[in-house]
Length: 286
Image 1 (cartoon, rainbow, N blue to C red):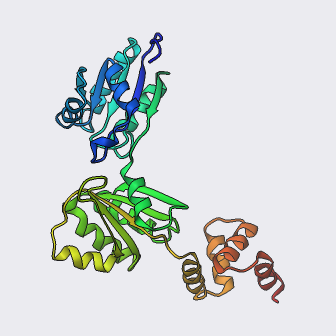
Image 2: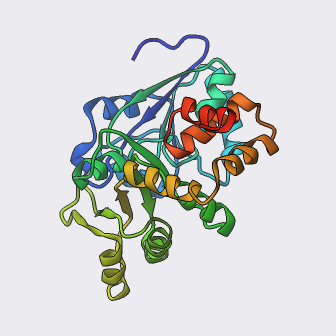
Image 3: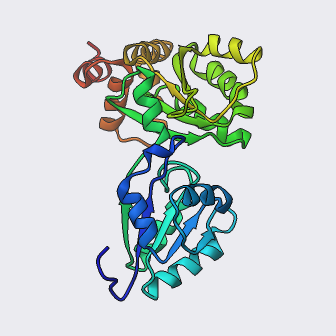
């Protein structure tokens, strides 16, 4: 590791998501060389550190102490200490408070670097067999009813593959909520990734619900959901707007404060026709 400058460096060190053999040589070296290791769960981290015979000062950094402990870590970095941040499993900063300490480092002009490794979302996506050409990662869905409903509703027209995380005791509710909003989409449920009993179920939402109505889910899940069919979405939109006359459709946007040209453009987009056709019918009456 290069000699420390006036400020230290924060190393985001990815750890295995299940199989300890996935720990990288660089990750082990960095953990051995830093001054402090910050971990989401120190008890969990000790198992990893003991396995690789790493003995370094260990401090906790998790969701409920991130404000006070974040200040502590920043002060240590400003003093010139090098710090490694690890999460319970996988890459720090993905669905964990690592994101916040990175922002604090940037604000304080402290160098941040990554020691890359496993990400459960990517492993689950690739093993799902569902398109990985374009995807959106949504992490854990909120348990706040309003936020949850709005988020799932927003996914209805998402044409990219959707990747979620879910805990076993919440899985069935999530599957039901997704089925109600998205219909019977093709999905994959990945659990115990990289471990001996790794399992990837490739089925649809309805069959997944039936399975877990009769069987208790075990382990943390990566849920991969096929995106919406672009042509079907367009067809539904066109059918929806056909219920209005062209004039009513146009006036709807005018009443919302759109300029005439912009209103025509939106009407054309909604109906899947050209702006010239809208202009001809509204202005020229053709």
